[in-house]
Amino acid sequence: MGKAWTQAQRDEAADLYRKGYSSSQIAGQVGRTRNSVIGRLTRDGLIGNANRARKTNRRSAMKAERTHTRQPSSPLRANPDSEGVKLLAADVWKPLPGTNPVRLDEVEGCRWPLGEIREGTFCMCNAPKVEGSSYCPTHKRVSEPSR
Image (cartoon, rainbow, N blue to C red; front, side):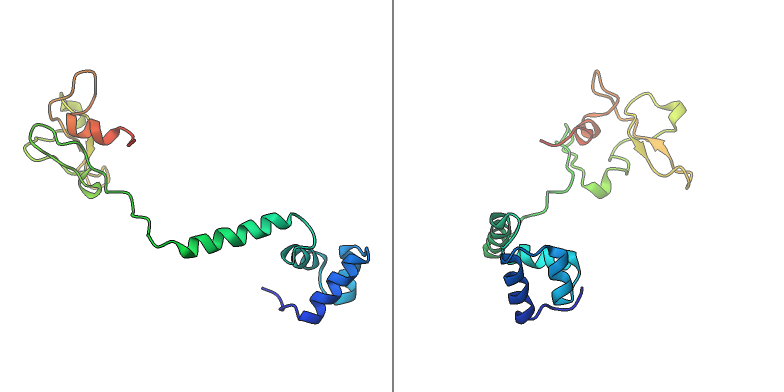
């Protein structure tokens, strides 16, 4: 960030602007860049949309006045299936309790990927699928976008 504006520089820039000088001419007089002058005059409400500057300040004040904090969205959870399985985000890629994960060429049930290819632990869930889906009830729910 550059040098702070003194009150004398601010007053001189505002006075020159009111007299009809361009931003480049004002910059030469007060020893600043043209963009610096434009920014200063905008923040002081002399040029541009002064209402926008006021709205921005009002918006910042409203954010500061908030008494509640936004809660993070809940971890990824699936609707419990018949066995009551719930998945948290960290557990989505681990085998479900009571399932027998298999390699891709052996899968007959749920095709939810598990494990890591690089580590040689890659397999599929293989739990019984929901009709018309590639996944078991738990993984089908996880795969659908939340509403």
